[in-house]
Image 1 (cartoon, rainbow over the protein chains, first blue to last red):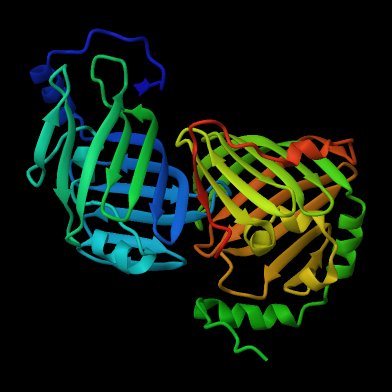
Image 2 (image 1 turned 90 degrees about the vertical axis):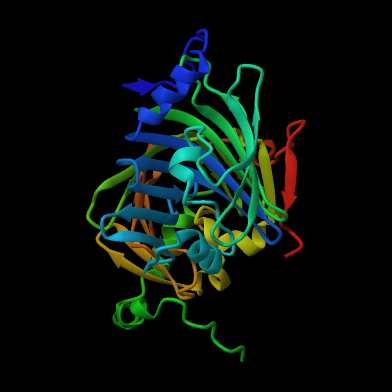
Length: 182
Length: 206
């Protein structure tokens, strides 16, 4: 089914069953507008994140011309990045992205935090008035400390994240999720 | 003579040598572009990977006006606006409420659209042009340009199709419809006023 981006507001599930349902979702496609701002560059584009199962995903960030900024795959054959015409294999794609592109994001737990789930590595977890996780800190494989915040959720039962910001000491990444396809 | 830029994409070197021997089509291309003082159209966009798998679709509007003025209004997959008055190039991502502004001159090669609004030989010398039937195949001589190849097709209404091929060999195909050649377009269309509450990322000093 496809969650259109402006569903009618519905009383959110109580949190235990909401989290149980979200945890059970391991196949989804997210379409998001993503902006990455570092001290020396500003990149933005359309992100298509296709989660295939709990672990494996395919992701593509492309600019408005459709030119791919990066592509990520995590499959049985391990994880790889396609950047500027070359494909690189790496266990730790966050560090590789950092070395190649000069910016990165906490990719290891992304399949979880995209859905609003903090994951084991998260600390300083904060909750909103409805008991939903709305912020936490995450240290990624490059050692960068990210402050993650869910600025808004979809106004439906599952209340999956809509606007997410990730801030490190010199980089800001903003996600505006336009749709969830489950 | 400035040292040639480090060749970022060695795997393209051999392909480039063959192309340099092909007959130069720039005169014919510049003749087509000379006909276009202004242009307005809707576009349907499709992005394919090397195996011709459809990766993304999009649509929106394009306005062009000589010299170096263009307005690219993306509606799908996301609302974005790219506007250039020849001096400043504004990029506005509506959902992210972010605006970046660039020096238009410095960005000419990166966005392809600016190229369509000029017949300046000095600029076009940086591109190798091959004419094949009615399609022009354009390669930037600087292999670091993210736009690896541009293909242009024309008809009586101006540009009918533009394809941008990136360094990952993916093709972004723009098909134009409701095209009007040399319509009246007010210069105000190519100016941009930053909406309130939007933070500006000024990339001009670089």
